[in-house]
Image (cartoon, rainbow, N blue to C red; front, side):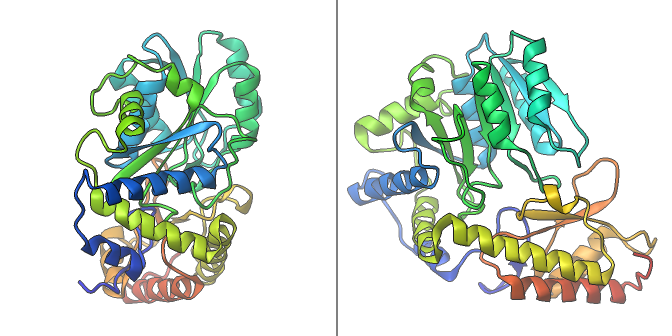
Length: 369
């Protein structure tokens, strides 16, 4: 497989630049002072994206984004706490599963997959259950691409004196969140999403106060964010073997992020990708699952063709042969597939991808869209 192809139209892993891939060609010693400086620089830059240096710590963690989500819940929710989990897709359900496995008390509120949770919903739920200590929310639910109203929900949670944990895996770096305007105890993201690094490192922006009070909460040695932060603050080093190449790639990806113009420019490129994708797919006759008002420019879910000759696996392989990797649907009620707008891709790539999709459907003799 060449380094130029295929183009990944997925929500992570995603297409990276040649510069980012090149950054992984150097080996680093995990205790090397230059690598420690690299880690510190990455954390400082990440905090800058949310304007969080004064109020939050950035705690990096080896592993996928889900590792960081589990670490945040396990570290910041006391063992006698209770989490209200807001669900409108598979990743909200995963939050609930994490609470179940960790033995944290939780309740769930689930809306349809095309229906955002509202601040009014959260207001009503918190009034009805005083035992809730934490609220857990997916910012952009990758199952569909739906955007939940984080700022409004955060204000309700804060007004009730509760603690907010935000899974911002698919939104961080492209959708603005200001830690001085949006109160949260934890916001969680990862290296291989909108920052256009490679997978292998999650990170948690934990409020300084919440993290200071989290000693002894964690169910796990490796996932204890309190201990991870304390050790790194004291030594400048990771507690356990760091993902050195991932950190180096993320550092290089962040340089490119700032060169591009930071969050506003990254958001605009993804928004342009999304708009071109929606317009071109509509010409093919493929309908998006979400209305524009709640569609984040991250990943778009499309209704699958109704034609019995359509089979996703065959469709996927044909599109892949033309240079583009799509993503299967993750809805339970209707058949869909997904196309990502993020990564080192541009509107011209989206036009080429839709042309490949249209050609694949013609080859399959799919006429009923």
